[in-house]
Image (cartoon, helix red, strand yellow):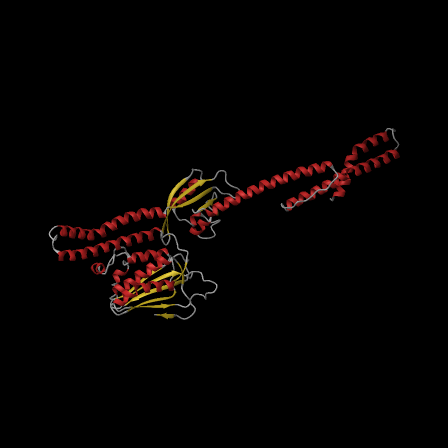
Length: 477
């Protein structure tokens, strides 16, 4: 029914009392029937004329309200000569402005809350009453993977204690705090706090789960204990030697100049060994402390290897050796930390110089790798570069290969100490490679030599670079 029909019907309704009065007068002879009919028509036309501004104004008011409902940013106007409609429209306008202001404030609050939620460094999950994830922040996505919403918590964190605590909170038993250990490429330690939300939100959130990272703290505690134990064990022998020589020089050999020279040389060697040991222990502790934080820089491998080869070239030449670099084309870019990668290559090339035969070549090659790196899904091809350091030495017996990266493990302890080794070089290499989410492979054959291969994840290519694995290998000597 359009507004004109409503206007006509409304005028008829408003005229009904006058129609009734005229009908009574006509029945009882107070007015003639014809006069009563003319009067009724005149009354209806008068009411129709007087109610037109109201009818037109109400039609405009309806259209304006529909426009507001369709688009909250619209600014419709109602032009009417009806004072009642005008006052009503002004009141509606004040209500709309107040509502829009409150809605804007709510939107700002929601945007701020979502921004804070996204920027929280701790993983955060909102759970419904069925333990399904309603919302997750960016930190949770980085830890647990993408597309978390609508997934059951048990499908992401298979931790019985955590799931039991979540169920207890959702049953209304109050907040819970539990320790959670996650086994990824490195062990991660969290304190999980689960808090109920009462009443539940409109989207169904019944509890919030926050994972606070304790990995660095617990790793620090373990490293402190390991450092004290390892340092006390490894430093005991050189310290005992130094104390013995000092006592000898202060006693029986006080005036023996030849003994002074001989003993001071040994003391200097033992002191240097202790300094190297402490430096390696501190380096290993620092690496282990940050092992759970994946590097994000984009590093080209070739310049790092060239820098290390230049630094060790003189030592190799002293034994008649040569370091040969064989790089890939296109250049190999990896995700990593340049200082840590330089330490890896320096330790491996230095080991090759120590244990290879005089006059041999140490080969360093860079090529695409077919290894499946940690973190890749089953059946998913993970792009990687393989950096291999090959020496021509006596080789390592197969039974020792699996333990070479253990701290202070030596195949020949006497020879290792004679060459200045601390027993920590390969342990440092292993932890740096783990830090980069890579793999260290060790191959060795008695009488032939050893190959240490580091597999590192490929960094995203720049627009100007060709794809991985294209182009010939370039031999650089």
